[in-house]
Amino acid sequence: MRNLILAGLFALSLLPFSSASAFAAKLIAKVDISSQTMVVTHNGRVKYKWPVSTGRKGYSTPTGSYSAKWLSRHHRSRKYNNAPMPYAVFYHRGYAVHATYDTKRLGRVASHGCVRLAPENAAKFFALVQKTGNKNTRIVINH
Image (cartoon, rainbow, N blue to C red; front, top):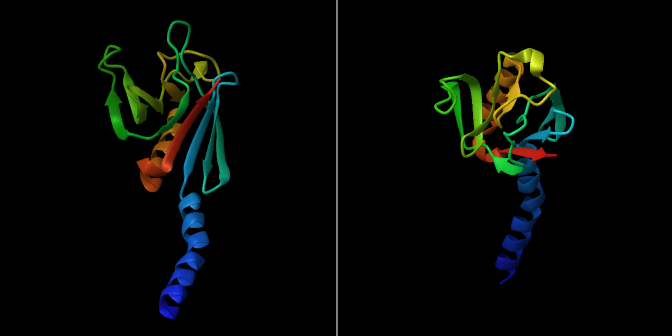
């Protein structure tokens, strides 16, 4: 009985470390539609704040909290005339965070619903998602 109690106490003593390390592994991308910005937090620290373009009139960007589903380095849209979507991080149906070459429109609504980033920023985000893992990545989109 004494050994069982000691084993239980030992297991409980490990909980703060395991939950802390699980939290530390998180990558969170918060997209604010009203300000057209994305703030990237990695291991609890703000790493980046970038301008984005989200869905223009007639094309909404879905709001909510999503995990990254899959990645595609050289993706092309099947729906929109084979348009390039490099460094695509898909999070909900066909919606993704991806690079755009139309960088002059960043900071304003311009997309068909995806979250667009400058190519260098999309490459950084893509690499962080690869490193952290899809399950440990959250994409949170608010108005």
